[in-house]
Length: 444
Ligand code: GLY
Ligand code: MN
Ligand code: MN
Picture 1 (tube, protein in one colour):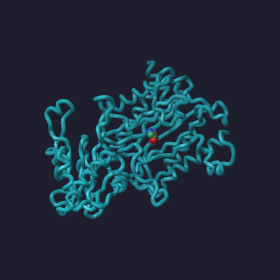
Picture 2 (cartoon, protein in one colour):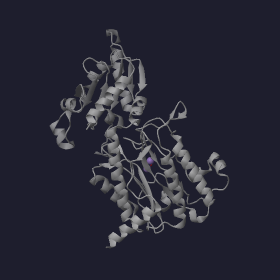
Picture 3 (cartoon, protein in one colour):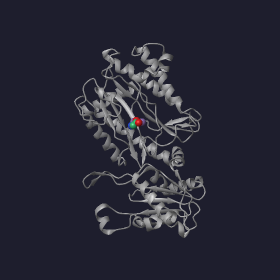
Picture 4 (cartoon, protein in one colour):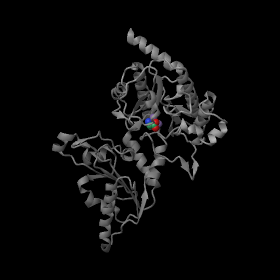
C-alpha cells in the first residue's frame, strides 16, 4: 500500500508541475501554541505542511524549488539534541528526514537565515500562504531583503508573490484511495463513539459524561484527539449552533444533540446525531426529527458527480420549508417562503462543507461566481438542522427549544455517492430500539 511519505512525494511533484516557471514555494510548520505559562497545547502540524511532507514536528520550513539541479525539495528542521530530546521527545533530525521523507536535502532550522536567501536568489516568484502567520510573513520578507541587499553583487531578488493556497486546495479537495480509507476509519470510530454516548445517556447525567464516552472511544481506537471541539447539547442548548460548554445536566424530555468526530491520522470525521435523553421521542420532537431526516436523506441522494454543490442544500431547504409549513411553524406559500428565506429562522446554516484533513476543509465552493460541480473523490458533510429558538414566540410553546441536526460524511463516487460515516442509529425506530436495548443490557 502507498505510504504517507510516498503519497506526500507524489503530491509535491504534482504541485511543482503546476507552479509557474522559475518559482519557489515555502511552507511553514504550525507553531507550538502556549496554553499557559510553560505548558503547551497538544501539537498538531499545519494541514498543508502535513499534506506535502507527512512531517509532524514544529520549527520546520519546507522549500519546493522545481528544476533546482542540487535538489528540488529542501527541509529545515530541528537538529538532533540529546538534552532537548530527553525533555520533549525524539526528533527526526535532518539526516534521517532526508531518507524517511524522501526529500532531497535537509538542514538545521537554526541555519535557515544563512541558506534560504540563497534558495530565493534568481527565483522570480515565491509561493506561500501569505497573511496567515504574521511571523512567517515577516521572515519571508527578511529573506527577500537579504537577497536585495546583494543586488549589486548580481543577486536577483524575487519580484512576484503568489498565494500557494489555490493550487494546494484544489489538490486537497480530491481524495486519494489512501485518504478515503483513513476517512472511512475516522467515520467508523466516530460512529462507534456516538453509539456509546447514546447507550449511556439518561436524564440526570451531565453533558460532559457523554463527551467522556466519546473521547474514550476515539482514543482507544487510535485517534489522538477530536477533529474539532465536540458538541454535546441537551434541550435548548442544541439551538446554540457552536455550543461547546457541555456542562449542563441532561433533563427528562430533552433531546440531546451530539456533534462529534475524531481525527484519525490527520483526517476528520464529522457526525451529528440527535436523540431523546429518555429513549423515546415526544410527538413534537418526532415530527421535527422526521422532517430533518427526510431533508438529510434527500440531500444525500443529490450528491453525485456533475451535480451542483448547491443541489443538496436546495433539497434541504425545500424539505424543511415544506415540513415546517405542514406543521404550522411557518405560514404561507412554500415557494414564497423559500424565496424570502423565511426558513432561516429555523435553519440558518448551509447543508454541508468539504471534509478532509481539516474538518471545514479547503476547496472553492464556487468557480467563476457559479457553484462548482461535484467530482468523484470529493467528500462533503450533509447536515441539515431545525432549531426552534426558546424565545420564538411566533410558534406554539410546544415547539420551542427543540434543536435537531443530523450529519453524515458523504464521498462522491464515480457512479453517485457513498456515506462513509455510517454505523450510529439514525431513524426514529433505530434510535428508540437501540436505546431500549442498551438500557436492557445495563439493567441485566
Ligand atoms: N462540527 C462542525 C460542523 O458540523 O460543521
Ligand atoms: Mn459537525
Ligand atoms: Mn459539519
